[in-house]
Image 1 (cartoon, rainbow, N blue to C red):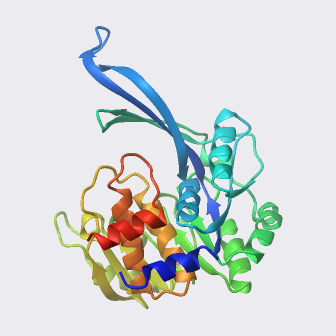
Image 2 (cartoon, rainbow, N blue to C red):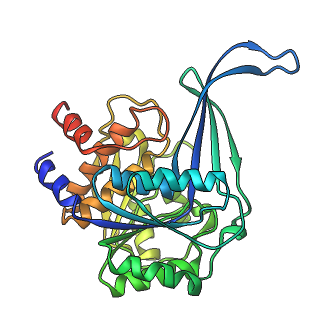
Length: 324
């Protein structure tokens, strides 16, 4: 990828604001060598626990890991998990702004045995417990928008992002001339229009477009791109296709499909967050959509080669690109 060192240098001068559903990712690492006498389930001998940022907080972690300055607005509970999550972000010099509430911090616990995820345990309240009115959010978000270069709306359908919140943040960001990107979750469909970038995966793009192809039918890429543009008038659409790479679209038309950059895949957890963060950083730094997609594709290629929710550094990007 030409111009990578220059792009990475530009990224260090950027500040990105993330608004969305922050969560704490908890990993229990262990081994299983016997079946429980109480039930037909494995007995896990726990070796260690680890914690990292998840959801919108992982997007922020990816931004900071690539050298950008970052602020994140989300719900951090007044509990041990909220404190732990804030500490993780602050250790990477990420500025945090918490929205009001009394719900628990969202925690995703994954049990990993011999490098395989055995199960996931979720601790969270209903989405209404994390909602905030647009009028209460505005004084929190307006100062951050004023000093950022781009805004990322990271939706995990947990409650922070509602139609009024998305509309208010988009309006404030557009008035300030800032790039706005959204990673949508169709299961809690948001109303949005005229954003600079959305990054659904293949399944999410079909749901957003309201298209249900027959089983085993090819992905109707052209129809999906046209329909999403008609519905949402997004400047750029990037559909992540997993092992098939990324589909780039502008103005409702397919521009290019970029093959995956991954050499080996251990864990796809958080790869979408990495792709989103990388795309926005490159676009905010002045790159074309195609250059931004190649940059994001390489970043995701590094991350899926790691186990657990992970990030990528500039040094890893350079090494990865140089050895392709």
